Image 1 (cartoon, one colour):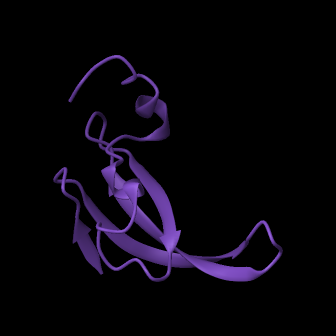
Image 2 (cartoon, one colour):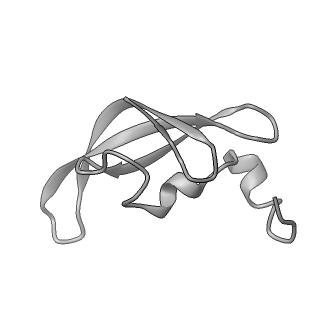
Length: 77
């Protein structure tokens, strides 16, 4: 499944992974892949299984890899 976020970035579901909540209960997260707008390096985000589009989480607003996300603190794009 692919999703185009409101900022134009595209995400694709690439898997699932188990997750333990703070209260100790088990759940599963979707793993989504996208590409950095600065260097085209892949990065991933994780969401609940219920998310099917970008309307439910701010994670889809991410546009940069770990290396570049902190460098954008003082610039707008």
